[in-house]
Each structure stands twice: as C-alpha cells, then as structure tokens.
Image 1 (cartoon, helix red, strand yellow):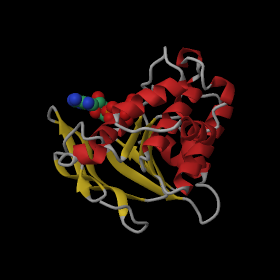
Image 2: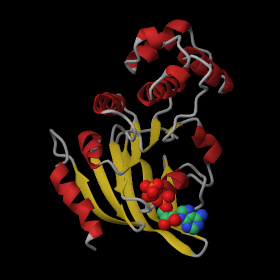
Image 3: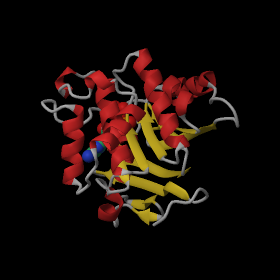
Image 4: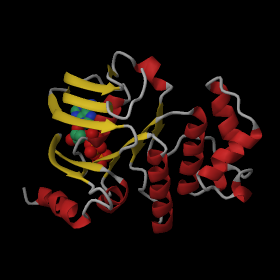
Length: 244
Ligand SMILES: Nc1ncnc2c1ncn2[C@@H]1O[C@H](COP(=O)(O)OP(=O)(O)OP(=O)(O)O)[C@@H](O)[C@H]1O
C-alpha cells in the first residue's frame, strides 16, 4: 500500500450513490495523485458532503467505487484510517485543553509518542504563534484550531487529507495562511482533496477543480504549469448553475 507519484492516491471510478431511492451522485470519475490538491466545488446540495463521506467509508457506493491507494474504501476502512487526516468544517478538538495537550492526547490514542521538540516543530510548521501553544483552544479562532489539527496530522504522518469547507468562516488573512499551508503540505508530498463552495479559494490552491452539480461532474479545470486556475472561468461555470 505504498504511495508513488504516478499512481492515483484518491480515485472515483464511475462512482454512484443512491440514498432513500434518490440519486445523489451519478457516475463520478476523478483521480488525485500524490502532491496534488483537488477541489470538488459545488453549491448547496450538489453532493459534496456525500462524496466526502463516501471516501471516509461512511457511505457505501451503490455502484462503481471510491478508492484510496487503489483499495475500495468501504472494504478497507480500518487499514486506510491511519493514512487519512480528515478535517471537518468544525475541527473536533477539546476546547478545555491547550494545543499541545490536544496533540499529546490524540497522539496517545493513536499509540504515537512524540517529544516536546517534535510537537513544537509541527506547531512551527503550521505557523501557530508560539504564545498560543499553551492556551486553551476555547481562546482560539477557527483558523488556529485548523492549524492545530493540521499539526496533529503532520505528527501522525498522515499523507492523505480530506478537508470539508476548510475556509468557511475564516477571515481573508486566515484564508491566505490556510491556502499557503495546504500548498506546503502538497509540496511535501501530501495528497489533498477538499470540498468547498469557495471558488476563489479553490482557484488559489488547487491543481485540479471539478464542478459538481446535482450529483454530476459538469466541469473540470486544471492549473497551468505555473500559476493558478482562472477564477473568472470557474466562477462563470459555477454561476451557470442558476441559469440551468
Ligand atoms: N440520507 C439521505 N437521504 C436522502 N437524501 C439525502 C441524504 N443525504 C443527503 N441527501 C441529499 O443529497 C443531496 C446532496 O447533499 P450533500 O449534503 O451531499 O450536498 P452538499 O453539496 O454537501 O451541500 P451543502 O453545501 O449544502 O453542505 C441533497 O439534496 C440532500 O438533501
């Protein structure tokens, strides 16, 4: 179950999901390789959360498959879990513990021991200000909680990230910092899939964007060799949904 730069790390193959007799996802196909950031973009009710839940093993495909490292996730959830970092829209860490305490606690649950200097290094890597390291998370902004969760994922050495609406509720500076962090993670070889309705943020950070509408992929965009995906082009495609 190794990660090579040429094989897809995350792939949807003719993935369809029906829930309560309702077609939610229809024939999705995409591949994400190591070092890439993939954004699944769509409006409310497009099927983004359903796609994410399918890759997290919480929903079983009705047909086709959702694979990670070429393994169907619904059949290999336990062995894949340790490779995956999942950041929900609201990061699930303890408000009454500090960043350092949260990290130590969740690492201990995973049976991982890290020295204080290794934890410091991870917190530095995500640019969490040192003066906040020993403050309770109840004092943190959403951006700071996300940084803490990413530091934890770095220490867990999880190479595959699933991000759910990561920039919603962040101020513009925190959005830029978060996008930089995502780009850094990808440059160091992580594979990142995010679901979002933030066109601008997706264009800033993604190598590939797929546009999801009514459970179907209706547009694909890739970044040029140097630079970002064109925001206006993606915005026009996204906005066309209301005219369809
Ligand atoms: N268990 C279910 N049974 C029936 N329909 C469902 C079920 N779960 C989700 N849906 C429907 O599937 C569609 C896609 O929902 P989903 O939550 O995946 O969309 P989304 O793109 O994440 O939306 P949002 O941006 O609003 O969170 C919606 O119409 C939703 O009502």
